[in-house]
Image (cartoon, rainbow, N blue to C red; front, side, top):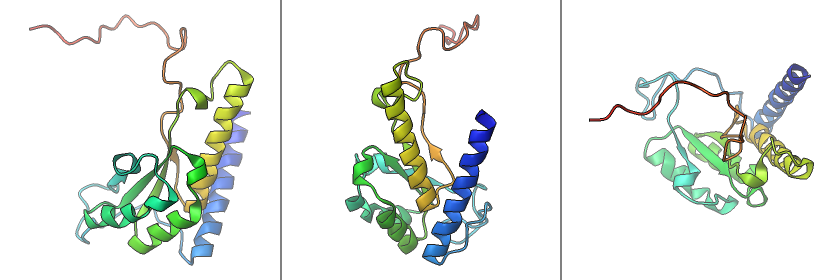
Length: 172
């Protein structure tokens, strides 16, 4: 069941990315990043990005001027953190990314009200609705993923097996 859901979600995301690329007249992005922000060889094979958390919180459609700032200081990816989904939409994000050449990454802001593992069905459903909204936004803007910690803020008793490993640093 889980594999089927994952496969259907991946197929849906791929379809949405193709549609978004066609709407914007862009070809789908390749997975290789041979050039750095100034056109020279990249220091790594992965692009360097900045999170909207450090620029505006919550990030809204009115904050897209930060895309230009991020590009000017050398970033290649702009991570949009979805704190308040009602204040974000795909169109302004796509326009800002197209104008700057930045890639968009979507990050969820999970907390107690968005716990997809909550015992209470209503609270769990609220978290699932939020996560689906993030996935829809990611597909619409061409983000290859939804980043963020999708687990509850506090580990529930019994979630993780007990370990005999002592993780404390040695004393002086």
